[in-house]
Length: 164
Image (cartoon, rainbow, N blue to C red; front, side):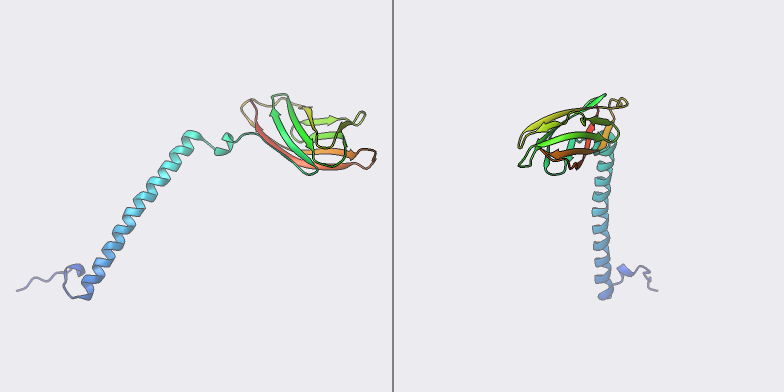
């Protein structure tokens, strides 16, 4: 009486043995890389938990459309200070700066002239105090006219930064 083996891999019938070795190799491959992927996911999860949202680590950002160029930004608890450069070939008269989620700086009565290529700082006082530690995000609309012109034009942009 001979013992009959029921497992397909133990039968020595040429093709079945080769097929079994291939499937064993495939299973070992999946297990090895599966553990590596699982370890990478755990590391990313731990870093996210310890550091938090990477957006909170980002610095201040200020962008505005041409012909103006953003130069500097300072976010405070009661005001925002922005510095712009006039990238146009002629002087511009700034009449209003509106920052959403903060306030409006109205210079209509006495527009501020920004000469070609020069820098000018503006301070916009916020209507409500900003919370320390929060991230401020707002859209900027700057109204200006070319020197000697009565046509008002606008430059738009965005501001984001951490409130100290």
